[in-house]
Image (cartoon, rainbow, N blue to C red; front, side, top):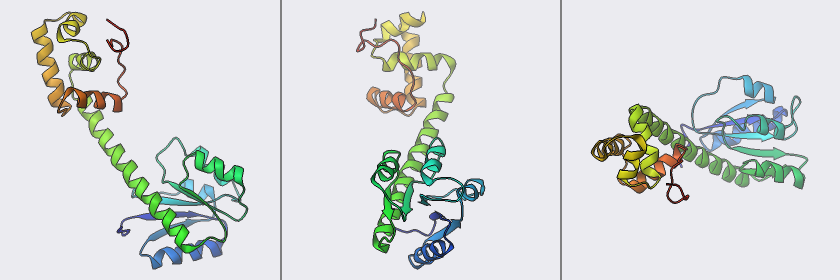
Length: 213
């Protein structure tokens, strides 16, 4: 894995740990940006690049686990926790809320590098997923208002005749709108369109499979 364009953020109040980790990462060709507190990390302008966050549990301003909870709603790098005072409840909480690993000091360089590479791989996959979702959302916005009405009826399993009746239009007109929806959403099949609708969380209220009309 090439790491030239990737970053590792380090948040640890021990300067010696920050320096040691920065040197270790540099020896593997990886860039690191270190912070002495959670506040410094949160307030800093951070490059938009695939990354990993190495986060100490015990920090001077806020517990690392609490920081994990606070940033959970946003797009943040996958977290690798490090701590000198590990306990099972903390590790379970960290992993349950999405941490890639929970390492107790002293840990081996190999274990840390494996966790970092797993975290960056995860970030790459999540970034790819967000980019794909952004494209799908833009395609949806490019639909006409009528086409946005047609889409959920089509993916619900209704026949063209039923969907047309629901909208008060002719079946031929419905078919035209349906074809436009398929083309604009770049859906290769109805099954593909159903998956796209699920990704976009488009509500389906007229499903024959759900017992609707």
